[in-house]
Image 1 (cartoon, one colour):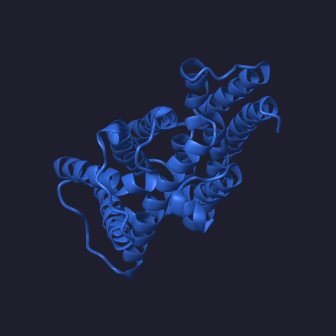
Image 2 (cartoon, helix red, strand yellow):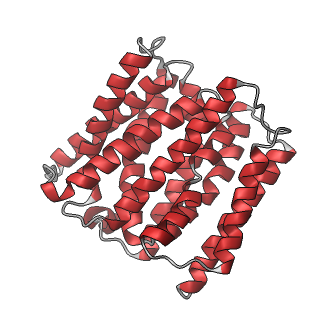
Image 3 (spheres, rainbow, N blue to C red):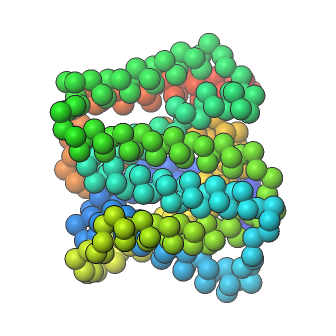
Length: 305
């Protein structure tokens, strides 16, 4: 694993380990992020996460003699990940999370397979099988259950906007996944991470200053722990891990592995914040997981296991 992190030329098995760690980190992050809103508004916390993460990885790469200036060849993915994954996705998900329970927010934000699958079929030439089609129908059915009037309050403007923002965020991330998969790399993902985080920090800070104004109510040790985990640990690892995994595994396989994230997210939300899982939400979650698992199984069969 150490060699993989050093060379970034990972095997499929090493990429799978990275992916498992990513899913665990993503699944538990939203309840922690929501807790941080008691100290700092959503956009400012997103900017703080990216800024502390950028400072950490700049120092780490400088210390190891690996700090590099990106080449023109990597400019497209620098902009794509820096703006799409590290600016738009956190801005949208943090803003939506402000109005939505963390478990539901995790599910909606990590619905990327639902958008990646048809896009990969059209743009990357992936094959649509009957099992994949059935899986997508089940997943869409689960999404419709989540927005059933019995489960979803359509009269609450903030709830509607929050859920819509989260869905849009997952679409933005899906576009980034497809681009990362298709990009021809010059530098590796780790060398690009600090620059992508720097772009995100500048853009998110400007956005937060315009929209939210003040930065919050002060810091204490609990908030400092949240910043350190969500910034230097989570932000740096998730960018490096996700881009590395996306290079090593097929686009659909990578995205569909994320289906465990909302399950962990719901469990973490109930354990950390006392959120509850209704029967309709459980049904919707089950249909989505079942549908996307069917697509993943179809993908596995096509590739011989």
